[in-house]
Image 1 (cartoon, rainbow, N blue to C red):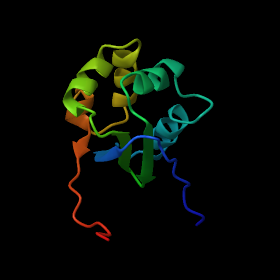
Image 2: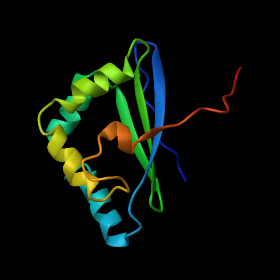
Image 3: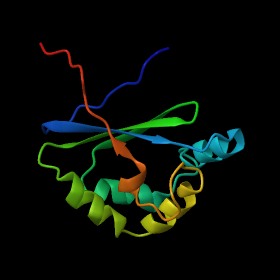
Length: 125
């Protein structure tokens, strides 16, 4: 495993980490991965993520479990920015498309699907 290179930013940042569970269906997971690939992901979604101030967003997968890592400036207001993101072009459509593969209720919002994680360890020095 080579690891993943991390960007550095000219501003102080903070990180959010969330998890989500996909349906346990190999074909659905393949399609979910395809939808998030560089070749297929929707430009409007990437643009909206950047527009609200998110510096970096990564999603990792293990089986049918996802972990999303979001880096943003220290003054980023998660609730306010996620509410703004939900109103941007094609965002509701995207949530509907990917929601078919996610283990959640129909029509669930992004905030209802993704669960914020608590950091329990940090290299403190």
